[in-house]
Length: 356
Image 1 (tube, rainbow, N blue to C red):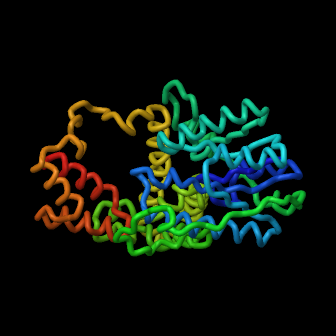
Image 2 (tube, helix red, strand yellow; image 1 turned 180 degrees about the vertical axis):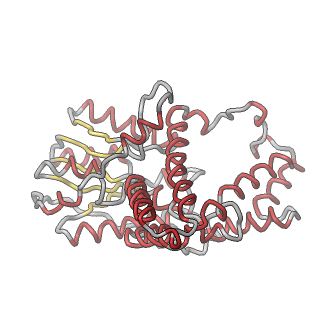
Image 3 (cartoon, rainbow, N blue to C red; image 1 turned 120 degrees about the vertical axis):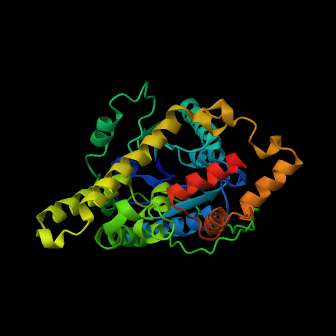
């Protein structure tokens, strides 16, 4: 038996782990929902709402191709152990996860289990992030090389896998996991079709003035790509977006000058920011301590747990968009309500808190 473990790669296209797993004939497609993960402070109801849609969409896609997505609820090691006890596992396939300290420690436990039980864990890079990199010299060229080819993984699903007798668990509600509801108005649609539509509308309609309009909160909601959530959960890959952008650039170059519009600078700018997206993930991969330790010691002591009573009131006002600074409050309330704010406004919110 071989397991394909879906993590932050909830897609069947350009999925190298899927491609490699389906070189075997006996494969279990597995998603593990870990209740403890959803108690971590950096995960919220809006993330869970998005994930719920994404997993359901993936399950539907697999079923349409004659395959099942087995959902299990609980501790990853215990679930893999229970499968291994009934159906001895030869290989575990997944992408390398760039997550938080909790997922890092979970992966170490899974790796230990695999080693003890002679299971080969085949992990594949994603987003151009290079694990174990000693320095970032020449990183951009390595990134381009690692993102130079899209994996034709969906074709593997035409092969029939050997049937198995493994039941799937019922997907729990947010309430069942103790995830507190927030003010999020749930506008995102977390499906592959929606991700493709969002990308297409950006590259053919909304993105023409991206380089000029991405900074303003008035225009950014339309002018920015709005693909970040789909990238985070791996509904669409960075390579797919990169290739689509490059194809759009090629089409633009063929246009008559009168029809070129403002696309040239915007497509170049967006192309560069795809690399920036992965660069900062690479920085976190290389220096994971920044999840807990400030890169600059001047920021020490700004955590809510270290604040005096007056400072805690100021922090709460900042969180709720009640500082009295109209621009600051509008941006914070927008973030709370929609789950999104453009990057310059994020930087302004952070700076305002530091100044207060």
